Image (cartoon, rainbow, N blue to C red; front, side, top):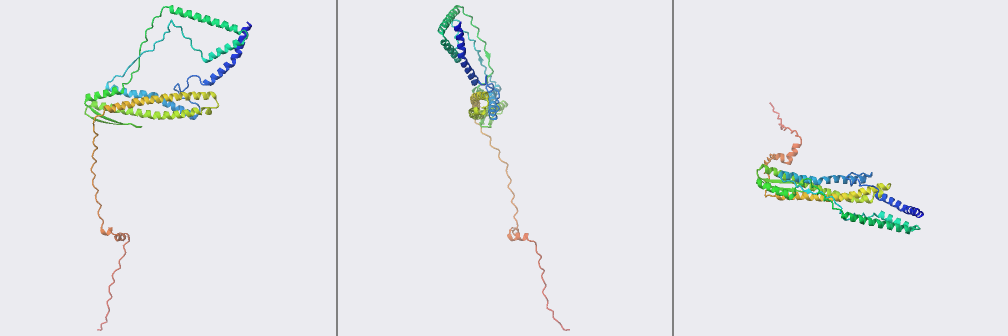
Length: 373
């Protein structure tokens, strides 16, 4: 009895510092229990304007990237529906429920590092107490008995009749999947050939996608088909341009996130828990940015392929119409020639000066002769 009391006292005294240290370390490492706001698709706010602007940009791009695959798929789906191409529907078998084998006993889970360290500590405390060797021997015998009982249980389970195999789970239908670009392009070619309608599509890629469609044929359904093809090509080119812009933004955000993570200790030095919380959201934002970069590249590849296939199938040799001739321009009427007098410099100067009064001619004086009567 005395040995048992000493043993309990030794274990409690020796294990207490370690348990306190482990609890402190665990709280300091976790800081923010559970998944972060960024991991849950929420907009995280740290209280610092610089960090909040980064998290807001990440959230906005995540919303855009989550909708991008569906937007691209809907474009192909709409054209496929117009062409009469059925969407692809695949059966997804449900995961079977694993049944443990009755002959094999369940494998015990490996102890965690904390449990192993605690067991080692308890063993050290037992060996340090007088009479602990005897207690250690008793514990070893108990373990041996438990192992023997486990073997008997395993043998009894093996002799038991096998249980009935459960019926396989029923398959469930996935959402309709838009047909692939080659399949849609093949349907476009078949439809245009059937209508005897030719098309020539050219797409100018860039921030603002532009398309030009030339046609040859008078069929109304052919003209409708051309409008659908051009509309789809322009939409896909716009999606590809959006994905290129998104990849540039994501690369810039990745660089900003690395800088913010390096400065987090200084920005939130007043609270260790806040620092841990911000760092966890930054780490999840980094992983999310990598995922969005992969998704943007995938969507861009699908959009570019759809545009290429439509350009290839609508590539008839059609010349652009000649531009209309410009309207004839009437020649300008020549200006009236000015008089030589007006054109001469003297005439111009004379015209500027006011007219002066001309002196009147004076009659010559007649010599008076005196006549005598």
